[in-house]
Image 1 (spheres, rainbow, N blue to C red):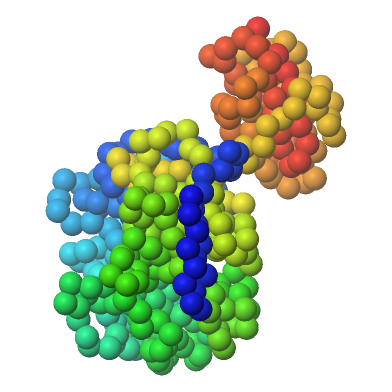
Image 2: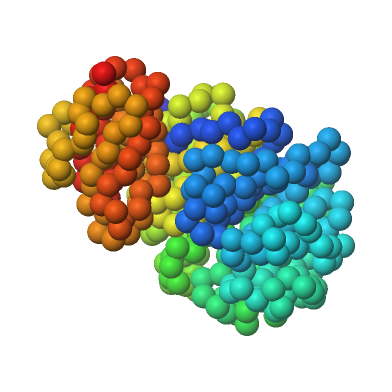
Length: 411
């Protein structure tokens, strides 16, 4: 693969990793395209999509229940829950809807559909609409317009992120004369007022903004026009809390068109993005990007979401949701072993001891080839989990939980 360099701009290249983290793809019970996802707690999450589709999980994304799935022409644009039962969604026809019973019933709160949302706390939230920003200070009951994107064309606010309670950024694009043009807005008073930032005025649509901490921030966009070529992405970075920003280019493999749809940086230097049917990861601040592995190659990801550093999700077409898991192979010689599984060999049910440290954790079972075959939420207070392995092929299996691992046989 060739590398190119332009004055003042560092060219970043995608490449495919021989080994990478693994994303497990789940079929959710609907075939509608999903467009957004949010987890208010470790186990409870919601996903929304076309035809007013709403899904809910109570086991950390392992399984999903279809709450609503209509045949209408409207869609839910985005979602945010402040606790397990209280949340808002954007309906492309009805505007802002709010629930207090986990999505069973919804009440209309504003006529404006929105495309991005963030809550600073349970009462204070910001939504980005078609060029407008609205703010609530009463948990979504009422919304007040705060700003209007500069009137230069038909625009959207795609992503909002706050570095702290007062400083936040909103990024988006407007369409002008056949070209996407970016816009970055900044607030330093908790969303009361917003000003456009000069560095964001580029010929690209800006899709995501992330601040993993107060100092380090990232803005990502796609279809960046450079010398008439739009087959590139663009990355802005700050390491001083937004005082200064550097601009870099994310370049694709030659001949491959990458339309960056979403991005999320979970800590300084480490981020993910979705592009043209793939998920990529960088561990070196965007210098290189590794193509991620998932077990269903038909999965076509759109939006990325991270509840925390270790809980990543991506939604996509055909009602599928991908979940990031640690795909590090468990060697046949198990280290830091815990007491033996029993019965061993197992048939039907098996009890798997682990070091819970008093905290709940995800227990994962792998076959001898290193493929993840089952996950269960483990109660850390019990120090073990009894798992149904009915239907497992006979053979050797490994399991891990909270950094400890073990093995057992199924007969």
